[in-house]
Structure formats: C-alpha cells, structure tokens
Amino acid sequence: MERRTFCLGALGAGLALGSTARAAQAYPSRAVRIVVPYTAGGGPDIMMRQFGPVLGAELGQPIVVENKVGAGGVLAAQYVAQAQADGYTVLMGSNSHLIQKALQPGLMFDPVNDFLPVTAIGTSPTVLVVSANSPYQTAQDLISALRASPRKLNYASGGVGSGAHLGGATFVSLLKVDAVHVPFKGSVEIPISLQRGDTDFSFTIAGTAIPQVRSGKLRALAVTSGEPLAELPGVPTLYELLHSDLAVQEFWFGFWLPRKSPAEAVDKLFGATATALKDPAVKSLFEATGNRVIRSDSPQAHAAFVRSEYRKWSDIVKLTGITAG
Image 1 (spheres, rainbow, N blue to C red):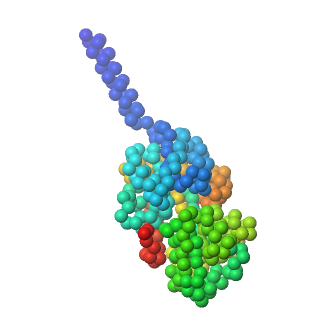
Image 2: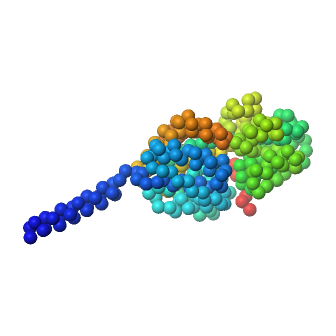
C-alpha cells in the first residue's frame, strides 16, 4: 500500500514537473507569424519573405508571413490587436496605421495603446517627381508655377490618405498654394499618368521613383527624407526648400505585438531582429526594394518614436485638411 501510494505520488509529481517545464519553455518554442498588411508580391511583402528566414535563424523558429490586406492596413492591425498576446502573432506596423487613425479617429483600434512596439526595421522616403519631359527642371521651377497659376496644376496619388496624397497636400499647404489632387486606384498608375502628361507632379515612394528616374522616364526634384539620398545625387530635401519638420515624411515599418504580450517575447524578438538587421545581405535586400535598414535602440525607444510620429502625422492631417471621406 505504501509502495503504491509512493508510485502514484511520484507519477503525479512527474506530471506536474512536466507541465511546469512546458509552461516555462523559452520563447519562441514554435513558428512566429508576421502579419503583413500589404498585397502578396508587393515590395514590402517580398522584403519580409526574404528577411523572414534570416530572422527565423536568429529566433531558432520558422517565420510565417501572412498577408491581411484592406482598409489601408486597418484590417491587419485590428486582427493582431485582438490576437492572443503570446508573442507568436506580430504586426508589421507602420506609420500608415498612425495616418489611418488620424484620418478616422473612430476606428476600432488604437495604434499607440493597443500594441507593444518592438523595433523599427526599415524606412523609405518619397520623391517629388515630374515627367522627364516636364518643363520643371527644379523644385523651385515647380513652386514658381504653382504660385503663378492657382489650381492649374495637379498631383497624382494612389488614393485618398495615401503617402503620395499626404506628400502632395503637405507640399501645397506649406507653400499656401492650390493644386488639384488626382487620386488613382493604386500607386502603380502614378508614373504612367506623369509620363502621359495627365498629371503634373507626384510624391512617389523611393522604391518606385528611383528606377524610373534612372531609366530616364521621370525627373526627381526633391526627397522627403531628413538627409539627401545617395541614390539621387544633387537632389535636395524638401526640408531644405520649405524649412518645416512636416516636410520630412519617411514611410517606416517595424514589428508590433499585442499590448499584453510577455516581456520575454518583446525582448527576444527585439534582440533577434537587431542581430538579423546587421547581416549585409539584409541591407542589400532592403535596398533592392527601395528601403534602408533602421534599428531602434530599444523597444522603449521605438515606442517613444511611434508616439512622436503619431503626433506628427496628426499635425499633417490637420494642416492638409484631408478626411477619409
């Protein structure tokens, strides 16, 4: 009887220890899913699918990329915000989420309070471009024309609230001039409209603009980065021309976890990402899609950056008067 009791007790203790061991498994113990709010086959999706194996090697687990497209990234954000906060569902968060919330305050997610920002990973400015056949050789030429001919010139975008829309609206608002916004269904139509002469100028993401400039189809007049781009020598920053912090518009992205995710997951994902971003091959693959690598100093630093960027993009939305409707 005593022996039987001992055996049952030992078995129970073994089960308890096994359960404790499983509960205490180090993160991550299985595949990590990254939710990308962009179309499969697009630049950000391709970049993440190439970066995934490098990050997975650092984490010791596979990275699964899942595309959840719609409403300017809102659907993906809402999905991740409501996911189990265990560190295994990650949002590819970006300033697009901040912009959408500033445009639509009633959205059922909060990009600042519903997530734990982990780190930034990449960024890309836009480029003020015109057709290579345009009479405007410099940004100052375009500015002079805008001032001389109110509402005679127009600018193209990939839709209301897009980066190109905000860039163009900020440009004319800071200049206190008027121009007509021409929204298309997607950004791929912008270079074509410029080359046909249907539109006069646009703020196009660098990954699209730079190849078009190099091929002689478009002309670059300014960039919205804080510093000039090495890929476009001699092209000034918009900040140099307008002397406003709101003219600095870089479209960045990074990793965000649901707000109640464990600190261990945040720290491990941050450390693995920081190491993976140091790989020279990663730098090359980011640059191939028009982006450059950026690394946050800490999750706390990225969280502070997200908050400051939300204030900035809210100010830009107020300045331009853009509404989602």
